[in-house]
Each structure stands twice: as structure tokens, then as C-alpha cells.
Length: 437
Image (cartoon, rainbow, N blue to C red; front, top):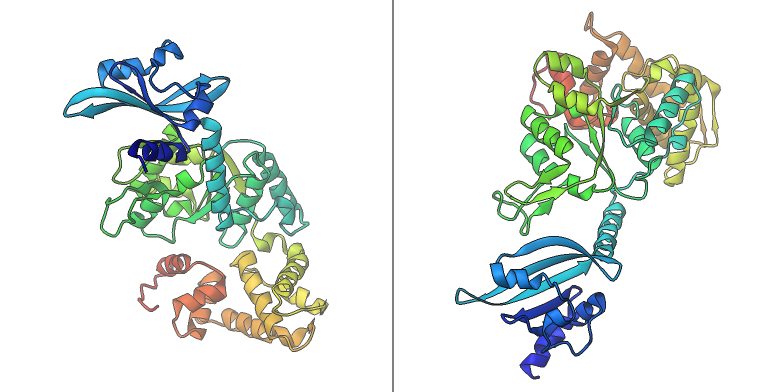
């Protein structure tokens, strides 16, 4: 194959428009996309570019030798983004090349990437109407969340562990104008500081030992156009708080080890079970970041304040287990509901879910009755008769579950319905500095 034909075939295979001129501004190469996007004649090669584009910016590149990246122009009623570069041989400018793409093409690629992200699990599934409960407390919370969804403001969701903060975050996202784009959740307590920094902000190739070749976009970039949910925001270290504040202020992110600044359009929903104002007073949380996050506040009620919702929650959990194909329950003894409503549920809905799932999975029939609740009754009796005088119900429950799991914290966290990091933090608060798993 003739080399010039070969080069032309390569140029025509590009998705970008490409046009090159020599030092005299004569067109030497052009591909099909450039001809179509710029409305040029097919036989333009060999002609002066100024014949068709009188004030061509390529002349400036020939004169200055400086590249111009990311210029935006309107051509034939289409917006295009253009890169112009000098062609330099042996230190001498011998021509210039321009590459360009329609902005709509870039937007399509962004949507395709977002769609792939959503298919990978970066997607909100729960709408506010999916959140179970008819109590006044939960109806009020859902009403406020629906109102917040209609705004673009940052939301801070507060509430105890297991109250459903991520469900509400998903509901707010799906009730917003960003519902069609990614919802990305990250637990700030589940990752050590350096790893969390690289997850949030991304990194460039070679930024650190073990970095992925070619670099990696951070969650801010992946969430562009959508919502980033930062759970357990109170666990952020002060250095990462400073980085997060800068991104919120500037709406730009820079990857670790990189120089390029990437504009991002991300709505932040944060959540915490901590008293951030108390953390500010003790120097553990930045007040300027707090006021950035605390534009709209949604306080979720604990389960002990809406026990009338327990029957509906139980049936919802039963149906979920049934849909997974694990076990189908058709009836529940009313005594079960009465029993569950006598407990204060320090682990909230998450704890209730674990208890009910255990009952369902171990049930020998298609009806839950008192015999299926024996384990729960024994656990509550042991918790109430524990030796820790003055200890909270939550502390007694955690210690009893740890006894049952022979100190296995991973298994205990699973039974309690909480993250292992959260369990470790609670034990530290209770004065347990043990190093068991």
C-alpha cells in the first residue's frame, strides 16, 4: 500500500476531525470527519486554508509556535472543541495541525461512561416511597427529603447507625434532576486516609508505588453530573477535610501526582452519626467544612421513636428474603410484633433486619411464631442481666454478641448490622482496646 494512502486511511479512521497545513498555510492532510464538520470541499488538499476559512486560527499557531488546547468554537451551528498544535522538525515550525470533536460527541461518551458506571453498581435503587413506615416521624423525614430533592443544595443527613441514611440519600438523588446520572456512595470510615484520598480524588500514572498504570479517576470524576454520598463524614481526617473543602469551593479536582485540574459538577450528600458541632469544639472537624455541608439538614428518627412501623418493616424484610428465594413466610404470629416492639433497637432498622432474617431463615414452616423468636428472647435476657452496671443497652448488647462470637469482631459486626470500623470505634469508646479480630 502506498504510504500516503496508508496515512490517509489512518486519518479517516479517527473519530476526531484532523486538518494539517504546511508553513505556507497550504492544506497537506485532512480527514473525512474534518471535511464533514467544517463543511470543506473534498479536494481541499493543496489549497490555501484561508480560501475556505479566511481568519483561520492555524495562522496564529504558525506565527507563534504555541499550542492551544481546549478552545471552543461554533461552526455551522455546531459547537466543537479544538486542539491546535505546531508541527516542529529540528526545532523549526514546518506546519500546524488541528484536531477537533463535536461537544455533543463528548457528552455522548460521558453518558456512555456514566451508564457503564451505573451498570457496575454506581446506581441509586431506593426511592423515598420505597422507604417503609407510616409513623409521623418517618413521614415527616420523607417529606423533607422530597423537598430537598428538588434543590441542588448540599444535604447533611444525621441519625444513629442503622437508621437508613443511605436509603434517604438515594431517595433524594432519585427525586432530583440528577436522577439519570450516577449516584456514588463511599463510607469514609471504611478506608484508611491515604486510600480514601486516592479513591475520592484519583491519581495519575506513577503517583505512588502500586498505582494503576495509566492512573485512575477519583469518585468525584466518576460522579460528574450526579451525586456523591459521603457516609460517616465525621471520620474524615483533617488533611482530607481540607482537600474536600477545596473541591467544594472551587468545583475542581486534581488527581494525586497530577497537574491537570478537572472541573466537576457534583452534588454532595453527607451523613454522620456523630455530633459534628462537638467535634468542631474539640478540633476534630473543620467549622468551614461543616457550614459547607450543613446547608440542608435531615435528621432521621431512631427506630425506638417509631416502633409502630415495626410490623411493616418486618413484612418488608420477609418479602425481601422471599424474593431472593431463600425462604417464603406467609403468616406471622402477632406476638412476634409485640415482642419486637418491646426492644429499644440500639442498632435500629439494620439490627431489626438481622434479627428478622435469622428468624425467617431458621423457621421450619411458612409461619413465624414464638418458637422462632427464642434466640432473640434469650439474647435480650442475657443483655438485661449483664454484669456491666451502668453500661448502656448498646454496650451490653455489643459485649454479649462478642461473647457469642468468641471475640470475632467481623462476625459480631455482621450480627449487629454495623460496619466493622463502626464496631471498633464503639468498643474504643467503651474502653475496650483489645486486638481480637
